[in-house]
Image (cartoon, rainbow, N blue to C red):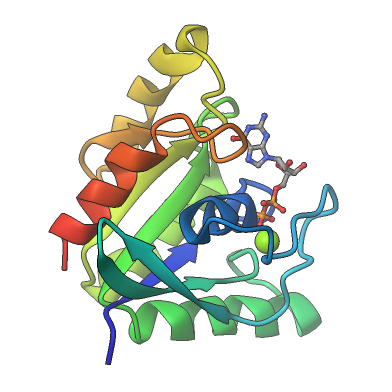
Length: 162
Ligand code: GDP
Ligand code: MG
C-alpha cells in the first residue's frame, strides 16, 4: 500500500485547494462556503517519482454536533489511518482556538504532523507564519495553495516524513 497523507484543519483554511495543488488537478471540491467536503476522499498523488495517497477531509471542529460531528469523526479517522498529517491553518487569520483544539487531537494521535500556514499569497504575508510557532508543532510551512507558492518545498518535506 502507498503512504497516506491526511490533510486536516478547520473549515475554509484551504485544505481542498491544497489537495488539488498536490494532485495537480481540480478534483477536490473547493467552496467559499465552509464544510463542503463531507467525507474523507482519497486521491492518487505523485511527487518527484514517488507515489502516495492524499486524503482530503471536511473541516475539523471541537464539540461539533450532528452533521458537523460526523465530518469531524471522518477527519479523525483519516488521521488514524495516515502515515503523515498535513495540518492546515489560515496564516492570515493566525492561530485560533479551534486550531489549538485540533492540535490536541493531533497530539493524541501521535502521528507526524507538518504545519502549513496557508494563504501566504505574497512575500508581504510571509512574516505572518511566525505566529504559528505558538501552536507548538514546530516550523510552519508558508504556502499559497491557490497560487502554488511554497508547495514544492512542502511536498519535499511531506516525502521526507514517510
Ligand atoms: P477547505 O474548507 O479547508 O477545504 O477550504 P477550500 O479549499 O474549500 O478553500 C476555502 C476558500 O479559501 C476558497 O475561497 C479558496 O479559494 C480560498 N483559498 C484556499 N487557498 C487559498 C490561498 O492560498 N490563498 C487565498 N487567498 N485563498 C485561498
Ligand atoms: Mg474542503
